[in-house]
Image (cartoon, rainbow, N blue to C red; front, side):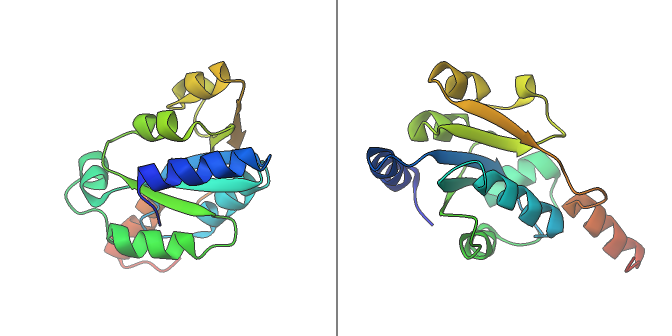
Length: 156
């Protein structure tokens, strides 16, 4: 778990070693199989994967006052422990644009619920010679859906 400056130094070192660096981002509030699948697919596109994690304040602005369920420290610890994730950086903004500009990843990965035109930072990565990859999502898996089931008292 790194701040953006430390992550930028680490990414520069990886690139000097000839490694490709991928980046993805999100809230990752209640980790589920869809998240793990996305991260595994993202890591398969690169040698090292950096995950940009929305801060608690950012999640509240994006998802509402009842979120996040898990605080940023807990979310970052769980994500950093996954084999597919090489570094986690918490960011305060609503989008990871500044972080993408600082890290300059070779590959930007998002779920296929986005189009390349909708992916924040896509233009920056592509102009630098990198690529944007959209990966298929696991149907029926979302944190919002899980929270809805919990509120309804359903376990299915």
